[in-house]
Length: 316
Image (cartoon, rainbow, N blue to C red; front, side):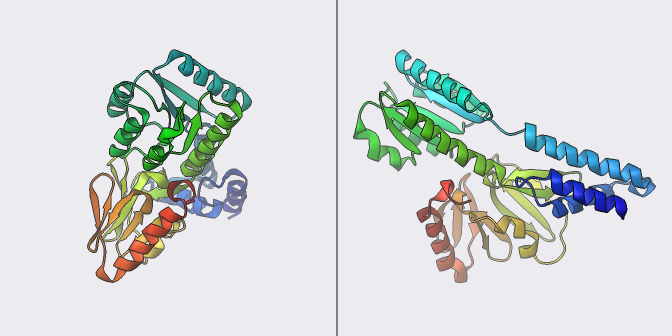
């Protein structure tokens, strides 16, 4: 018991808000040991160091595994292209603690081909006026791919401002870009990105505990006494069995504003809902979740309120 008490104190110092609270993490970790076939043969000090190793590993992921903000820059003019690259370089010098990754593209077609082959970016900095495919058309093409990355538009004309918000633009800056305004826009994007990535849920599977960003979960579904988590990469995580009610089992998910309990067997991420009908919720990835008839008005209102209150950027 002294060992467990010491470990609980250690957890309190170690765990950050990115993860579950220390006592909850301790329970998960003990469960991992308990599920091990050889756990009953461990001496107390062996169990302690096994737990310690797991906790330190998790914390290492927390401290060193922060995902970089993946940025795509698309501009067909070399002068503008180099100017923005220099501004990003200056921004990285000012914020040495922030991890950014920059990829550059000379045309919308080149960027789209890269996204189709390698996946989406977190932030797109797009010129509005480009040949073949302008920045607004490029933003629309990204959105049709269920791409939820932030869009920052750079242009010499204010004429595209209204169209930019139709593709859910994050910001719209006029050229020549003022460094202060550009840095403010990057600050907002980085903070929003960090908030999204830091909100995670612990999912216990038969062989591990997985920390999954809330933003990556489209919906969770009860299957008997198990829960299937459907992710944005079209994979499904199968949890171990739970005791008690489904609502209690998904209480950690439901603590986030973007997650909604639908009926007795589903929790849905409102950000990934594209349409509410009287019978179903339509989600990105061409998925459907049934809506109980009695809940239609409530679900429709919750979905509308979510977007009216800022949707992606403020839901956390």
